[in-house]
Amino acid sequence: MSNIFLRRRRPVLFYLFVIALGLVTYVIVGLVVQTALMPERPSDNRIPAAAVGPGSVIGIHQDGSLVPFGERPPPLRLLPGSRMVHEVSVGYPHSMLGAISAAVEYWGQIASTLDRARAAQVGTVVADPVWRTAAAELSEGPVNTRRRLGLPTSGPVPDGASVLLTPVAYQIRQITADSVTVILLGYYQTTLPGRDPQNRIGVFPLQLRWVADDWKMPAPTLSANYSDLQTTPGSDEAAVFGWLPLASS
Image (cartoon, helix red, strand yellow):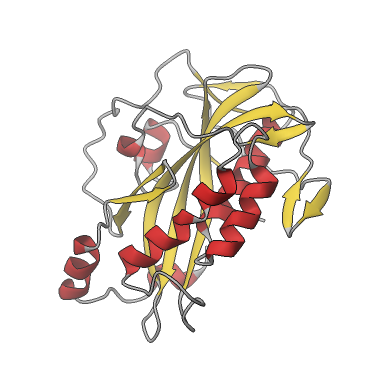
C-alpha cells in the first residue's frame, strides 16, 4: 500500500475543525458514507448489527461461485468495462463480478470529484434510466463535500483541492439475478490547498440493477445503516465483520 497513509498526523485542532464540518457522516445525494479519521476507534471485536452471520453469503470467488461467511478467498480481481462513456467505464457483464466491478467504478467516479458538472455528467452515464433526476441530484454531491471541507461551493475547483476514493474491500447483500447491494470499504482522501492529504476510512453502500444491458444505479432507497462495519481494512476485525479483499489494480 502506498505510504501516503503513513504521513504524519495533523494537530488536534485540525481534527476538531474537520469534526465541526461534519466529519462523521458524508452525504452524497442520499448515498450515506460513514467515515472516521485514522487511527480508527478501538477494536472491541463485536459483530455490529449490520454484519452478516454464519450461513450468509458475503461475496464471490473469482469464478463467480458464492463465498459464505467465514471463508477467506484470495483478493477479488475486478473486470474492466467493455467501453468508456464520458471517461466512465461501463458495459459490465451480467454477473456478480460485473456488478462488484461496476460498483467500484461508479463509486470511485462519484466520490472522487469536487466538480459539480462532472458529477452530473457521471450521473447521466451510471444512473438507471428511470431515475430521471440523477444528474441534478448527483451534482449536489460535490457542493456538499466542498461545504464540509470549507471550500467555495461554486466556481472552479480551487487549485490544490481534491478528493479520492480507493475501495479495498467489499461485501454483497440482497442478491438476485438482476440486482444486488454492494458495500465497499475504502480510504477517502481529502486534500486542501497548502495542506497534506488527510485519509479516512469509509463504508460506501450502493444498490445496482441490471437494466439497459448494464449495471445501473437506481434512485437511492437504502435504509440499512452499515456504519458499524467501519474498520481498518485487512485487520482481524475486518474479517470478523465479513469484509473480503479487492485486488489492487
